[in-house]
Image 1: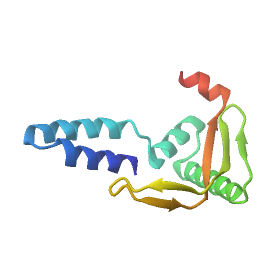
Image 2 (image 1 turned 90 degrees about the vertical axis):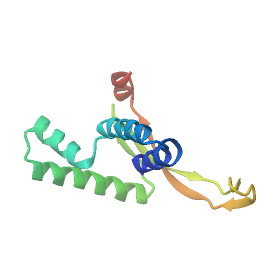
Image 3 (image 1 turned 180 degrees about the vertical axis):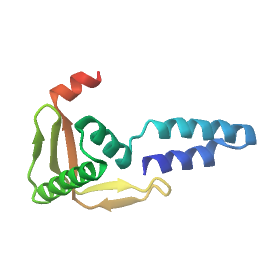
Length: 125
């Protein structure tokens, strides 16, 4: 989602000439290289743990499914040193349509929050 938004912005707003199109394309490829997708995460898990890629995929899928199930029940998932996943309620509010300026009602909803743990925070500084 984030990558497609960047693509849309650069291609629609900046790439007017062919030269600027190529510059934008190079920039987007650089940004894409810095995003780890699920397959790359599975490969990294397999190489660091000694598990096969199939077992690493099963482990990651089980983690994602278990975390999702816990969050659906509004439970917290705390991984000491890594971080905590939890559900926060976002209240209903009045917003504005940026194109028309007209007021709109935004419904209340639950959102997933992640708070990094101290070990993770100190490692990435």
